Length: 181
Image 1 (tube, helix red, strand yellow):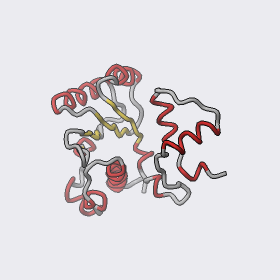
Image 2 (cartoon, helix red, strand yellow):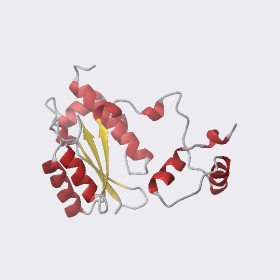
Image 3 (cartoon, helix red, strand yellow):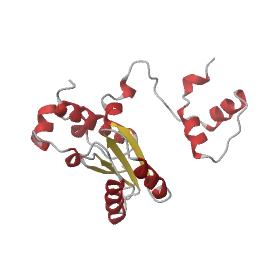
């Protein structure tokens, strides 16, 4: 499969579409279930990663949008990030996902951090998106904790709730089955 770049891009795009749907973005089933042949018809044999650009809005709020960028270049630098930020600014899109073949350059990473108060961006390596980890049999269904379950969890591990986004994010990673001892 490593020698099949079209199949690889098809699988990555499908995983991204599943992820967007799970996050509440408007994704139709055809986009998720697109066959490799349909993918070829839509993007062609010589598909360029940048042609895979995705723009979706939330189901319940069309103004809340996200871009998914697939840079062509192996290394993504400041030039790429500035181009994406300009598009996001013009279109008033506050969120983005970057699907990279390799890493960002250190300068690009720094520039993204400068943009972070205004734009929320997430970075994924292509290899991380070849399969949807949520479909693995050993990954339980994740659910947000109720306030009561959250309180129980905090007490159980003698933790304090803070306004730190990372703590909140980590709290949300706990699922209901984790509370059962």
